[in-house]
Each structure stands twice: as C-alpha cells, then as structure tokens.
Length: 562
Image (cartoon, rainbow, N blue to C red):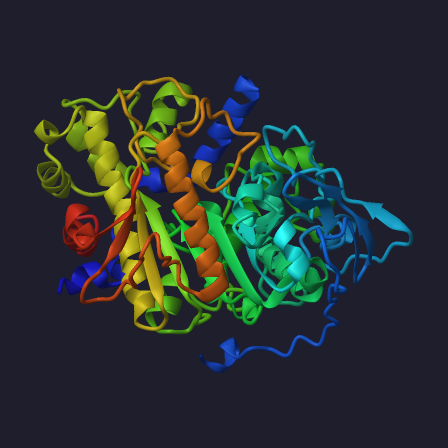
C-alpha cells in the first residue's frame, strides 16, 4: 500500500499549484462568458428545539400552497411536480446585519408568492435575476412523488469560486423526479461572505469571517424546520455541491455548527481546497481590504457603510473562504477528516478526469496574458519554467515533474500541463480524502470520464477535446438555464445521466449509490475501487491512484520548494 498517497495531512498532501487557486477564480470568467454569449463532543448531535412542520395527508399531486414557520407560500405547478422559488431562509443581511451571523426571517401575513427567483448575492458580472444584499433565499423542486411524504432531501450548494453563482443556475426537475426533494440555495459571496476583520467580531477576540458558511448552515436549519411540510424527511438530508460548493460540503463536514443538520454528503470536484488560513492571517488580509475600500480607520461603522459595488470590485483581490477560526471551523478539513473529528456520515466524493483543462483553456482564450504563473502560451520552450512558477518549486523539482509527464506522451504541451495539474490539484487530493474518510465512514468514489461531454462555449484553443473537464458532470445532473453549453446529450449520454441521477438519489435515500443497474462498491484502503462514470456504462476501476501518479505527487509535496 502506498501510504504516502493516502495521507490527508496538510504537510503531505500534493502541493497546490497557483492554477488550483485560479480554479476558485475561473467561475468569474465563466460568468463573463454567460453575459457575452447571453464523534467528539463538539460533533454530538444537538437537540434542535424547533417546531417541525409536517405535511397534511392527501392524495394526488403535491400542493402548490404550503404553510411554513414564517407564513404561507404559493408555489408553481409544473409538469413534474411543484416548484417554490425565492423562499427566504434568513433575514436580509443589510445594515447592522452586514457581516453578522444570519438572523431569523420575520413572519408575514397572507400568502407569499414563490413563483419567481430572488436576486442573487452581489457579484460581478450581474445575474439575469439581478443582485442585492437581500439574497438569502432558497428554491425547492418537489416531485409528484412527494404526495406520499417523507422523501429524501438533497440540498445543493452552488460553485463559483465563492465569488459568483446562485441556486437558480440549477434546474433540478429530472434529479428530483428520481425520488427526492431538491433544495438550491444562495449564500453570501466574496468579501460580504468571507471578510475576516477584528472590528466585525461580536466580542473582542471572537472569530470573524465564514459568514457564507454560516448562511449555508442557516439554510440547513430552515430545512430541518420546514421540509416535512413539503413531503420531505428532515431526518434524511444530503448536502451536495460542486467546485466551491463541494469544498463547502467538506467544510460543513468539519464544522460543529452543522452537526445533525445533514446525514450524507456529496462532494463533486471539491477536494482541492487551497491551504486554509488561520484567523490571524485572514484578519490581516481583511485589514488590507478595509484600507482598499476606504476604511483606513478600520471601524465596523465604516465597513458597513461602504457601497456594495465597491466591495464587489475589491473581492477578487482578497477572499479567504474557510478560515480556521476556532468556531465555525475549529481545524482544517484535512486535519478534521484524518483524525475523525468530523460529521460521521456516508460520503460520495469524486472528480472529473481533466479538471484543469477548462481553466487553462479559459486563461488562454479569455485573459490572453500571464496570470496565476502561466504564460500566454505553454510550449516546449517554457514547459519546465511554467511548472516551476506554477508550483513554486525549484528547477530541479520542475524537471522531475516534467520527466514524469513527458511532452511526447501528450497531444500538446498545454495538454501535458493540464493533466499534471489535474492530477496534483484534484485527483490526488480526492483519493487522499477518500482514504482518510473511509477509515471512519462509508465512502464511495467516482471519476467522471466522458470525453465527449458537452462543454462551455469557449474558443477551442487547446485543441480537441476539452474532455471530462471541470463542471462537465453538471449537465448530467441538472439543466443549466444560465450556462452557455451548446447542444444536448446524446441518447447514450442520456443513459449515463439517468444512471448518475438514480445513483445520487439512491445515495441520498440510503447512504449507498449502488443500484441494480449500476453496482457501486465502497472505497476501501485495500481495493481502492472507484466508479468510472463513462458513456454509456459506468465501470469499476482499481488503478486510479496509479493512473494519476498520486504516489509521485505525495513525494513532491514532501520536497516542498526544493
């Protein structure tokens, strides 16, 4: 057994390249394209002393009007069930509530219309739904089967680099139709969601930052109180997310504040967490950000008075999601999972084969300049230097990496570079998370591997294909009305999509994604079985760590900058 490849401790995980940090920013480029194209005590289950609304018994389709703890909602009947859009789960985080933990929603009288999506949390570029600091809303897709009551619930946390995105980006009727209620949420983004600053502490020395993670927990608390009224089971909630949303799921696993609010976890392309910062590091960055937005006096009053557009303009400069603050996150994700101090629920975790190919293609086609340690074009002449700059390693180590990924084995230098980054930043951290988690909880692993998956509409600068790159699997789980993805799934890809949706809902229902049509074994340290999600038929593979050279990358991590 290659124990180095299994380690999930921060000091022995693969060294994250600058391109991994670009992955947290690349959603901004994607959004621009949309506009352009059109078991310890702290983890004991708490007693949530809250009234739980239950659905009245009835026959036929689910009702379009539902009573929840804050009032009555009127949803919209669809061909597959009912949707409730723009449902508030927390008070507007404005005024004195800017950079405060989420607060309860005020009750309303009469019937609240839930037919339209809410504005999104402030971001750039803007969403078709508009943006507002009053953005803490969720959406529910309730299938016809909910009339029977007690369906499993999937709460989807969107990606977007903690800077962009919204729950409305994910149309979930197909996924819900497999037998689950799907909830998609908004949460505070950018500086509004993740600014750490001592002036914002509730008391001297108290932690700040992680407001977006607290929003996610407030949404989960809302689900616990209200989902039964829609026919869902508050005792069977799965949190799921992709990219920054997947990383959010991993953070919630490590957060005592989320304990008891969910019962399974799905992480898609989210085991790539950049090194998490301490509260002191994050607050130092926050002080610099305060100065940058005109608050040199470093007071909360000044910060809460800064126009939102100024904060949005500053947010790409300094975002620190997932600060290890001693409260929301007592320790890093890696330490929490390696030591068993996390929510011990079944985990489904996976990656796409060529995660980084999207980011390099976006860099080459959109930014057209040196960013994140990348030259405008990667070629044989700058291949080693680009590796050295991107990973912050010596020429000696860069040459070792280049020899492990020789150019003769790839269609182009860009393909070689994206493959090595995909392995280092996504595939090997994912297998390390699987190995650490499998010690404590049932763990299931996948690799999305459809090389012909529909792609975001970007210029073809790397040469075909983009293959199974970052976000490719989403088209098999959701319709994405705001994403510039041309074309549609082929009949065989529809077959794969059906298998994936069925497996995701099976996992939400039972804690295992295995079905009669698609057997899916657990991941364990002996067999390391990973399900390859390929068109048209998924298959079990056992050579994932070897295929992605994870033992090699563990050695590179130990070398550090040498």
